[in-house]
Image 1 (tube, rainbow, N blue to C red):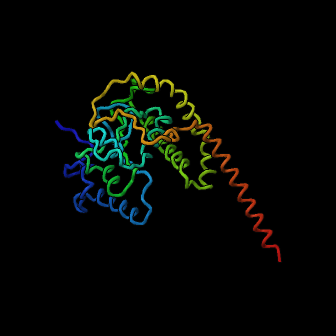
Image 2 (cartoon, rainbow, N blue to C red):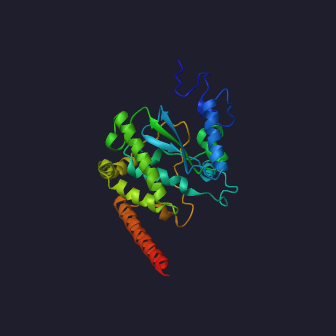
Image 3 (cartoon, rainbow, N blue to C red):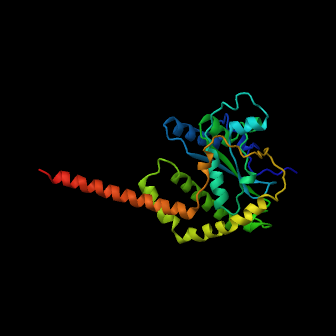
Length: 278
């Protein structure tokens, strides 16, 4: 007996129809891809694209992403690999989630692009729309083998928690960008101080030590995409990508918002004085 959880009424795996979807055969994929193409054509392409799946074999929650350099390295191809320039920011969100979410593990993430995955959502969004942070998030059907949920199955509460941590990860990702606005800084400062997130962050920080000790003892598992065991250092200053302590991050956000408030008040005051001069 074959059990499939992501097929259409035609019996097609919809995550293998993103290359050339047809409006009358795969309407959801056709229109979703059309929206992505439209946004990209107007210069408003997504910063992050993520497709959410369940995984029937590997444990925990993890991401599949896209990296040409890691794909070439895994294939043993040395031609042109050293000269290839690649935006390594695709690793930032998984690293953030590894610190935030008890169910998430960076060790199970893979950033290889296989030929057999060319028609999947994450590869098409990466290749055709240029979304460097294009992922598939896999949540295991088999539970967790690390952290506070070790030996347990995922229920609704744990999946909702993972969703909340994913949204918080997106917020932190935006806070780390140079284009972060003053309004977002102020809202983020309030959000990061909110009671609703406090117990999540405390639990994640308390479980980080147990996660790191469990990482070394994990055995290799059955995988439907090949792993990449090498932590590639593409540039000498890659250490700048290391994640900050979230208490320090919150403090910096508040200081930045406070400084911007002072600057705006000074500008407004200068403008009023100029307007008052006859």
